[in-house]
Image (cartoon, rainbow, N blue to C red; front, side):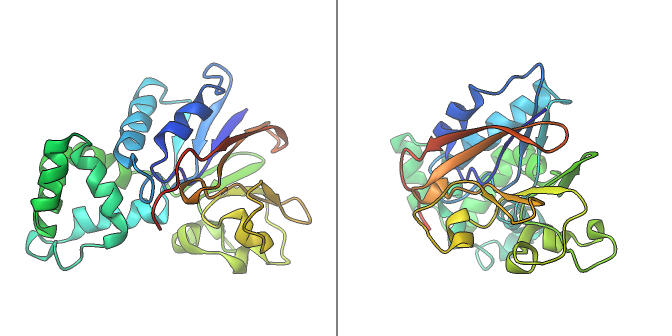
Amino acid sequence: MYFVMSDIHGCHNEMMTALVHWDKEKETLVILGDLIDRGPDSFKVIMTLDELKRQYPDRVVVLKGNHDESFTSWLLDTPEEDLAFYYMASHDETIRSFYGHDPGNTQKFKRDSRKQRGQHIRFLHMSYLHFLDRLPMFHETEHCIFVHAGINLSTKDWRTDERCMNEIRNPFICSKTCAPKRVFFGHTPTGLIRDDQTDCSVWISQHGDKVGIDGGCSMGGQLNVLRVDHDGSILQTFVIPAKSKGGS
């Protein structure tokens, strides 16, 4: 069985509340990407999942989301002299969390330039950057596909299009082509799929081949968590309300 959640976006408290229900002996934990940004504790989310992956290597699957990808691309692929130029303000909350929450570190974050912030994280936390960078794009089983955003249903082999796995929205969600297996995905908040932002519950397509679980937790919604059987059947749904609203 699988224990599935997505788009944690720095909401460490909500993630920990959900993990209380995870049966480590019987279930594989599957995180569908976007560990970071928006919420207050991205660093804690990364640190916790890295530790769980080390403790239960065969029971923990963490996938890469588009936010995780852009953060590691900035810090691992950018020459040091260009760190300030490619600095993305959307990562501010994540960068702040790498500094820590005590007053001294908060002041250092404010004093440091954009380039210094990148250097600070590179110097102290390279192992966590490599953890994020090495995350797989999808996890496939006999009956299920787990992925961050979705898959390209218009190509012969969806596995060849990694960009779609992290970025696709309507061409996958609204496609009349049925997926080859049941696809569990995040990325697009379910309220946007329904055009009703007050409804953050799990979304299931008409034919049941697509399951969207992003409840917009970091934006004041909820963390949707599924207990899924090996054949893709949803056995149980847990709803963890957002404790605080993160940034945009």
